[in-house]
Amino acid sequence: MDLKSDKRRTKKDKERRNREINGKYSAKHIRIQEQCQENHLKNVQQEREDLSNRGKPKKDKKQK
Image 1 (cartoon, rainbow, N blue to C red):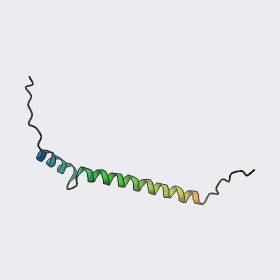
Image 2 (image 1 turned 90 degrees about the vertical axis):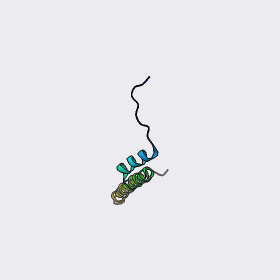
Image 3 (image 1 turned 60 degrees about the vertical axis):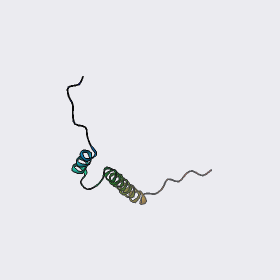
Image 4 (image 1 turned 30 degrees about the horizontal axis):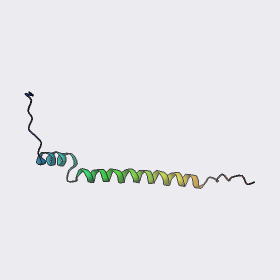
């Protein structure tokens, strides 16, 4: 038998822990915010690449 007996976690305990970690937002809300931030950074990087490539001449395919 296991002598170590911890109190079981209740919904209130989990809610309190999540509130300490994430503030007033839910874990789902935090994941959505992180995903939006990653997408924004990708879009900014893509725009920079497009602007830098705009001045360069495009390589044309050889025609037969």
